[in-house]
Image 1: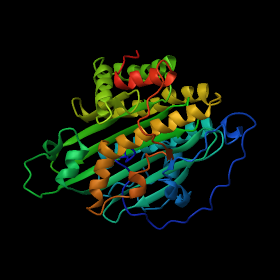
Image 2: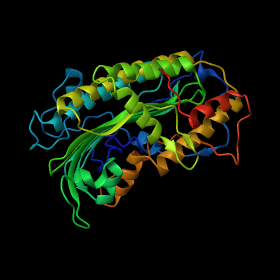
Image 3: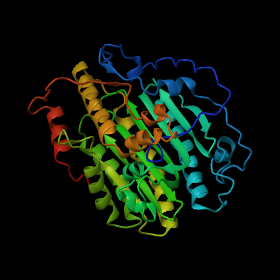
Image 4: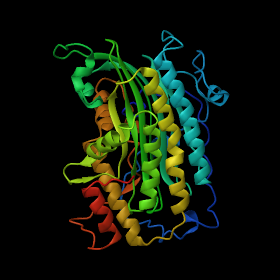
Length: 402
């Protein structure tokens, strides 16, 4: 999954925590998507994944107490989140400081998305691992705007097989910090925040982000991540807003970063067996340690702060647009492409699945990025001159939006 928060998702063994009763359904609003008859909302017999609902059903509102100091940061975060870093990690270490940044971002982004949805709330599932680390899974389902949204935080300590390292980073085994013997594993630390949000309305794009920090015990470190958007229909103003927001963030640090990271996203999110991209890109970077760690940390923080600014206005603009059954079917077909990319090419999903063999991983979290519903039609081609054909051209030939 991209949603694996490290690259992947939260991984670890769920700790024993008190379970809250399921949240009561929210009444449909008088206007908007939730108030429409089911036939117009495109509820039809399609391939239904329902992956991740087990996470939602088990979500807890309680905070797991670990008997160690809370992450430094705003009081709101201190009350809700307890550091998953080991006691041996210094308070001023990059491990703890990155964790504090993503813990605060998780709270801010979940609040912004709840406010936008106006109905459903994110549940909370804290978990720990006996060997150290853990995370907090946040999942929202069946809202007014969202079919499913997840924002997952992970802290992981482990022994990484070489094939997992190859999946985890652009430079693969070079990131071990030294020459590896056959079969040798790499002790590592990883922390990240990752999200995928799937709206109901076909005119509201899916959005994904992932920001992560890796260290190996041999001294190698790097940052990775990015934010990208996957619409079913092309709106030039929406793409200018989304890409422009991230260009502004990148330009504050290096004017070469946006074109470089935008091109990297176009290349990374290519569905090679289809010859088309998963969506319309954004920014993506990996193995980033060209600057001092402080600069990379601040960049990640500002990129996370930009998520609601880049995404929520697009949702507010499109959330109540009318749509047909055919337009809903097109959205589900594009969701099928999303599934194909994530299961075949996504570095985070592959990393998470490879780590399962080492006893490190949660399959629900690794696959949480998948939509609840997706569809495949045999040899389907959009009609020439249609809006569907228009966006297919953008999927096949990436464009410059700003």
